[in-house]
Amino acid sequence: MGKMLLAMVAISLLAVPAIADTLKVGVQAPITGSYANEGQGIDNGVRLLAEQINAKGGVMGKQIEVITCDDQGKAMAAAICAKDLVNKGVSMVIGSYTSTCAQAAQKTYFKAGVLQTSDGTADSLTEKGYWTFLRNSFPNSAEAEFVADYLVNVKKYQRIVVLSDFSTYADGLANAAEAAIKKLGGNVISRDKIKANSQNFTPVLTNIKSKRPDAIFFAGYYSDGGQLRAQQVALGIKADFYGGDANDNPDFIKLAGSAAKGAFIVNVPSPDVLPYEVAKSFIADYQKKYGEMPPSIWGLMNIDGMRAIVHAMEQTKSFDTKKAADYLHNMATPLPGITGPITFAKDGNRKGGAYVVKRIQANGEYANEYVQ
Image 1 (cartoon, one colour):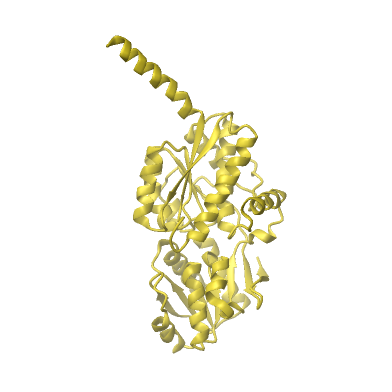
Image 2 (tube, helix red, strand yellow; image 1 turned 90 degrees about the vertical axis):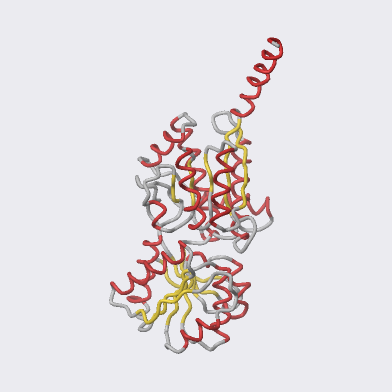
């Protein structure tokens, strides 16, 4: 019995280094569902970065092990993913793509001391005091102020419709945009909502048409935005269409078809125009590995979040996530990023941010209409 116990202890001790010798990185993203295009882009990017880091010896000698959980773009699945990834011993989680899913998971990560970096733009994500959360994009409030200034002061629209779905991200961005437009003296003639993924938006668009808008700002996701644009044109609604940042995806153009021409997208600069050397190098490697461009800027922002956490661990010479978070909240020198310089405020918000308005051309390509 004693020999058996000693043998079991020996086996147990031998198992510990095998677990400790990898730095487990979780990916929480919509690998399937309406936002699979973006989720797969995030997962692909994380795996490519992990390969690159591992090829150089890993993180302080540890190889990165990537563990992916498909949250399907749904809050309930996101909550399950969070528990699963924590149970599997991840030190950091990259994702999710949507604010709703990021929010559904962040309390679990906070309680476990697991760092989470997400492109979710809902302001509420950084208002809970969770030191574990790092936003790698920019908050809704920043985009809303830019949109309001452009629609009211630059384009001088007189009759603006603000449209969204009911998600945390979309509803938050739309509400912020409506408030910012009104603050500048703009006229919001209607604030409407759609049910995401319902496909037939004729009832709400017919109501909007009766109000004779000259601009529609849609704060929702590309999977609905493309269809909204197609149905808007089919119904003869002449208003200029502006899609918020989550519409910046090739599938918007596919879903809108010929109606995509003339639509506008508001976002930070897209992957193909990023001027940074680290961006050009990573995107070239991404294309070589996967045979295509990253689907949008969002996956690259998540990669920058992962790069920042790894950088913090190396700078603190520790895998202690609290030490890494403290370092990132007090960075004196920005980390050169794929999507621009990376620094964080004490609340976890990424500092900086510049937006562009892009017009979709007849050939499906973008042309910058206005740069902040």
